[in-house]
Length: 438
Length: 169
View 1: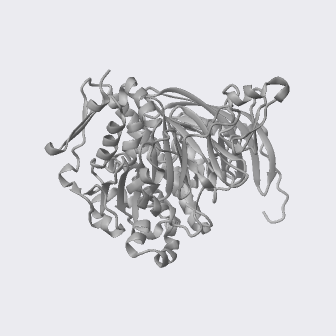
View 2: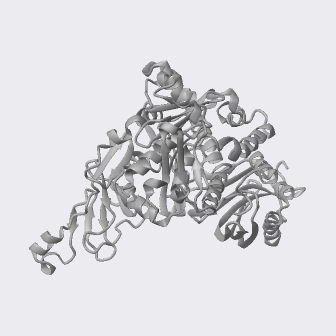
View 3: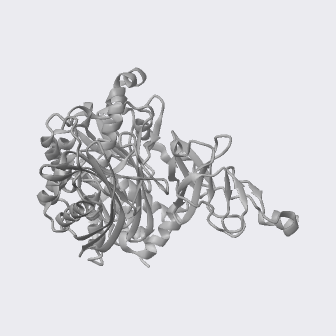
């Protein structure tokens, strides 16, 4: 088997950073990722607004492990392995639902929303007390569970550092989304899951890849631009899209950051920030935060890619995207629209329409991304020694903060002006290689 | 029309024929003819799933898979014909099966119709797929023939492989 570490050719002193394409295609590497990364890393599970009431649950998967998050009677959220303590049946019957008591459909054992076993069918007549003690009848919580500003994360490694430490330099950028609304953010109803026939890391790269925007999404920009000509005035105000920004790259400030722990930032000034759905909050935000922060919130589109498989995208609309590996060449992707609670009706409508324009498999953008990534997957099989040389923007990479980062008061590990750069990928691949044991 | 009594002359067979005509336009890629079947004030709506059994039902507060006016539909044709969308070039061969067409009532000058659909879609680079669901139509009988005032498409497939677009649902 090829060594995972050898797939990342990282020679900073020689200004070389390359990734061998076997990283996307080798099934044994994939097995290593499932254990070395997914069994040890903090992973995004859901947003607290999705399980607002006692008994609300979301069933999901951490790497290969089915788990669920559930709101207890005291309002606390717990995360448990999704398996009956009796003989391992999956407890949740739905992807999401409400169950103040989870009843195992196989043999009828019951559990409350805090994971405690409340009924062993047959009870003391069927079991010796010491047998039940030995089995342990309560549900097993995952090893670590924590929240950051409403975003819920779990980790299957007891020894992993706390969530705050893991998110590290990504936190100020997550805050830019989370702190936009006086009453907090909520995930909207309306789900989409789609399958990409490509490796999960292609989605990680794509999420922070500013270079593909002007090619893959040129069609998005021309299409919505054309649509605006059909309804003169009808797409003004908040409904106005930001298509022009995609087509006029040279006129805007943009950049990319490595903020540590594998997290990547890509940003670009918005073409018409007043069309952004959070623009009506501006006066309130200016009362609370300094000018630099408000500028970052409302005038800069941002992608925040959290290692290994989460994107918080706050550009024309606002999206949470999670991609879960299924096999080396198949990935399941899930997206949600996140919006300020109590948002003004016009802003909410505009946010939703722009979300539908871009983020769903029925949109004018995501299907093109998926095809591009599937093409990259197929093409990565072409050569036995194919390397992706991530040299784009390497010559403009600078250590520490640039002017824009300084406006936010943050110091990335490095900065790069222009969003058409590949250097933020170094962050991901270095973390990836460091976590793989072989 | 004033207070005149409207005598509906549209038969169930006319309605079914109209739905088949739409499917024919899509499967044969007659995009402009397809667009002409839609009223200027049309709403084209594919709600998203909300939990395991429900659909979103408030397009101003919930996310839909697609929620478009006629300009949105025209833009879809622009996207298809531009041959600049990686997902849309090559286009799949599609075969719409539209069935169980039933008139559900008439109100405010609209004829409400339900139907069931399955679409087989094939593109060489991806292979074949079959999706299915339900249609809810609101049709208006005009001097130029029936026009679609609302088309609501329930897409039953949740783990979606390949793009969803107006031509394959």
